[in-house]
Each structure stands twice: as structure tokens, then as C-alpha cells.
Image (cartoon, rainbow, N blue to C red):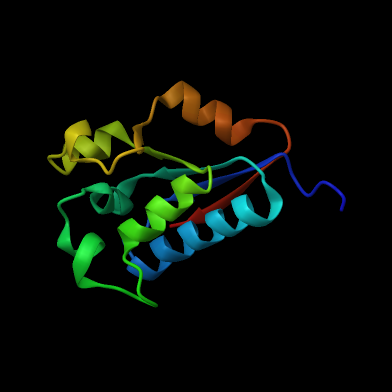
Length: 126
């Protein structure tokens, strides 16, 4: 198979539950099928879903037996990385202690480097 990309950067800013789920499903599929590095950068309305105490993301809504937090965990277990915008995290009244295990608070320089690296494709769910 020819190399399709050197990696995938997913910009996730939507607060739409189905777009959030789709971003993690695509990211996990790319990790599992192509073994490419995949980063999901969560910002704007998507940030509240990283809160481990948010019932909407953890318990209340399950599609095909999986919550949004289950999809995030599956993605990270497949080797994907999740970063969350520190400004929006603070705006939601959250701290690093509120995040699901494995989710990182973004550093602007790291985010830009990952997004703009040669050969990295970008998807946006916003």
C-alpha cells in the first residue's frame, strides 16, 4: 500500500455529539487500520466532553453500547493522542484534574507543530 499520509490531525470544535463521536471513530479507525499517528485537538464546544464527571458523555447517551468517553478511551488505547485547549478548559471551569486519564492540556507550540508537520492531513469537525 502506498503511504497515504504521515499522520492525521483532527480539529474537533463542535459540541454536536454525533460529530464528536465521528471524530473519535475515524481517528480510531485510522490508528487501527493504517497505524498512522493521530492527534485530536479538542477546543471550543467540544471541550466540555473531556470532563470525566459529565453524565452526558459518560453514561446518559450510548450509541451501539458506547459512550463518548468509551470512544475517547478506545482511541487512546489504539495509540491516539488527545489534546484540549487550556483557554476553553478554564472557560468551562475545569482543570486538569477533571480530564479523563490520558488527555493532555494543549500547548500552543506543540499543537501547531503537530498540525503543520509535513505530510500530516487535517480533518475538521466544527
